[in-house]
Image 1 (cartoon, helix red, strand yellow):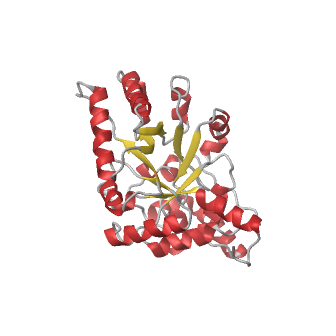
Image 2: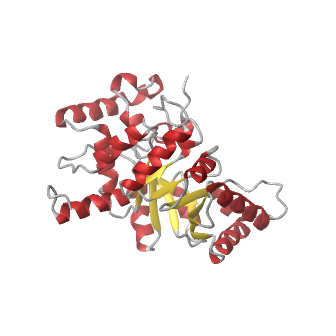
Image 3: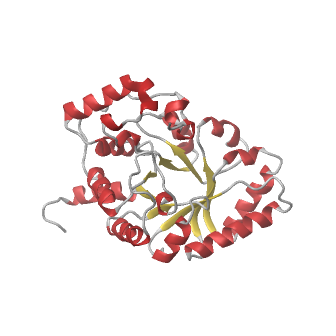
Length: 305
């Protein structure tokens, strides 16, 4: 053990790192409003994965819809990692829902080079409320019973989706957006309700697709309606000499209900910066930047000019 750290400090660091999950959408697509490097190259992705595992980040988040992400992960080798992947929506003209889902999962496992995954989520939860909803969920349960999946659940965009889903279905895992600006999972009470029901919680968009990490001068014009919020954010960072990465991570990691905080990075260097920031404690009060404005908190609403 490094003599510079006490046993308690080492344990705290381990707990912080194991609560991080590496998002891999950028391994298969150009992703993020602050992305300057495009899609991550295969050699860089492999370096990032080795670095993640060496720093106790053992969970990876991917999806069938993430371009070549699953193929990239399979080529790199998944030993030592827990994998969470996501299913696209079942086509409207699908005649055999269960067979379609089974085929999608078999193909996904093949690309990943594994026989099972830790988590399988529906990328669009609303299909559970349609006419095939029961069949879709039964298919997920059968995959779980067969040992191809350990946990099943949904990836949501708004906690309001849970109002309709939770009374009908029993999930093992829910992934939702959560960050300094989008605090709905907590403010609606759903974070605590999920934890009370022993449902694992993964949160994504900790950096709001990189928007919270951009310099004030680089914030795109379409976000000017929230200039007051940006002024508050950058003034606080300057006054407290805190990096945006550290503040964003400290905020999400301060909620013990969250089991995994999904982080994104475009290079090993950037991932190292995130890991370094996650290891630092933050002893100052983080400002209240919360907003319920969908045009800000939902990246699907962003329309860059």
